[in-house]
Image (cartoon, rainbow, N blue to C red):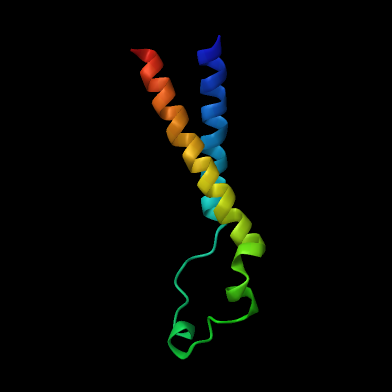
Length: 77
């Protein structure tokens, strides 16, 4: 029963990670990075912005993905 619950949670985490990765902006700043245009208000406060929150949530979900993958694999043995 616990294995089924873990599989369902694993599938939900997989879908959530996929969606969050697709929602994030690219890391390349283009030619603006050469002239220093990347140092804007949003660039300095990225940790407090929505993009920063998406990165944090993606990181936690990725950790959950790996932990669940390991637990499901070990419990199969």
